[in-house]
Image (cartoon, rainbow, N blue to C red):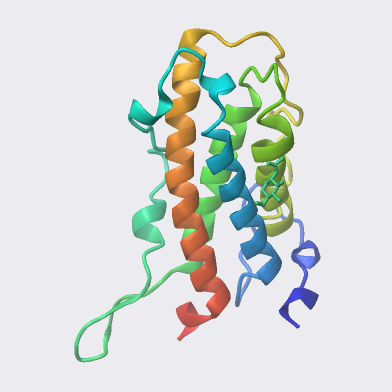
Length: 186
Ligand SMILES: *[C@@H]1O[C@H](CO)[C@@H](O)[C@H](O)[C@H]1NC(C)=O
């Protein structure tokens, strides 16, 4: 039933994510989950991180958004009064900005073995276009550009950013599941 409310029906808007009254569709929850799977898989690809033990590196989060705090579920006091009301609009805006931030970064990484392009970048783009209805910014490359081999520093930075993206995508999955359940409107 819910699948009938396809993401693609969402209207195309300006340079901001669509804020839809009501719930995130099942299809969007699935797309977010696919993205998480693809990032998890990419992190195991030794080819991407040659000369680096990525598991031992620290992660780098996008500090330009406040997704964690803005998207925290409504908290209730023990008397049942809402302490902080969940704000779907600013939560979705923060998530949309996260997705664009990571897209811009990943699209400019060397990807000589086409590890990121057909997986992470593709599922990221699907999520952005279908569930956040971005009007694709003109300064964003739509194809992974460079096929040249990555330098050590590029691989190191890719590892850290991808680990941060992984953590953020776990949050995004949790939040989208929450919005999908409809609990946030109660
Ligand atoms: C991306 O993740 C989905 C869901 O796990 C999987 O079906 C698909 O094969 C993955 N894509 C690639 C190319 O790894």
